[in-house]
Length: 394
Image 1 (cartoon, one colour):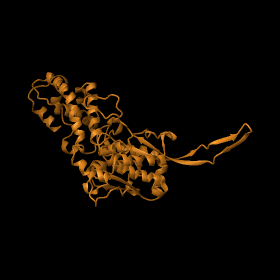
Image 2: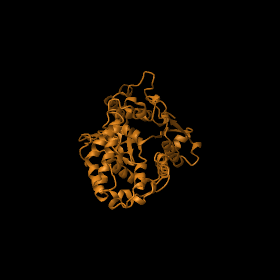
Image 3: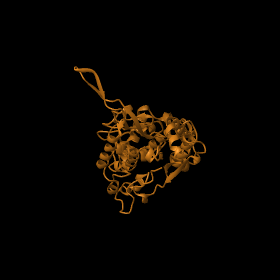
Image 4: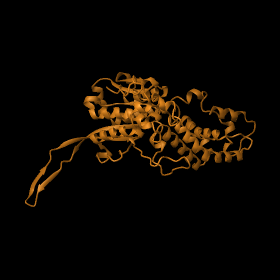
């Protein structure tokens, strides 16, 4: 982005058409190398505001669980060791617990380092075969797929902009940067003239390109993703099996969007068949990054205890007035809430409110673990490295 800004500043002629504004455009931050990696604190889309507001929203929704959790003592919660992730957790905690949240809770920061093995929130950093891209199907696989697709649409956009400004050198990479600026600047200050450079169809194509990147970098299209995501999924399933009285009533973890995506791949919550093509936009796709992991995206696993209506019968026509019923009973279910929308588990969403019977959910998670493979084996962990998450406990 800085390279594009400097090129615009150095260009001696006025710009025309879609780029007419760009000569007088100022970078929305005076320190892009730092600020682009930090939590946004200005504008209507500020990450700080969204994190705090989400805390208030979830406090309202789960107040009874919070009260039960606090009755046991301080509540532990977790964040991966990135400054913006930790900041997000802090702002959320101020809304969810209270302004002086450290009285009620303790944040555990889990380093984003490779030696943690399976005891991590950021499995993409500890699965070294994935991180090092040893077979070209790891972390860089998404960028390779992105590059394939970019070649199908960026040249036409570049040619359109070049016809308006033949003296200004525009590359495909420069067009991509302009499209990214539309989003980054909008988040930072609430609007961006860069968005008006492109047609609606061109921005839809850009959105698809971003979908491809996430899908193949750490989502269902990456062969490592399921095993990476199953670490946290399996640990959470064990907590749901134990229940609130035994394990604790609340477990809150904060990570990057690229760490949420593998968990969704492990769960197969948004099945995309066939895989997303790189030759054209699949307009009927299920996998959409803006729905799955928007800014401030979250996934909530709810453990529900529901009274089941008893099954009744009679012996009519001989004794039509004699009605027999099973005893009243409760059953435990799991419901999945993605960004404030209930998403049914494939093949298991017949319970109350689109939930899945706990035993069936646990069986599903176990089966998915067998399908996606062992994290330790797939990633080539050393014999000394931890194989599972150990820190998720109250």
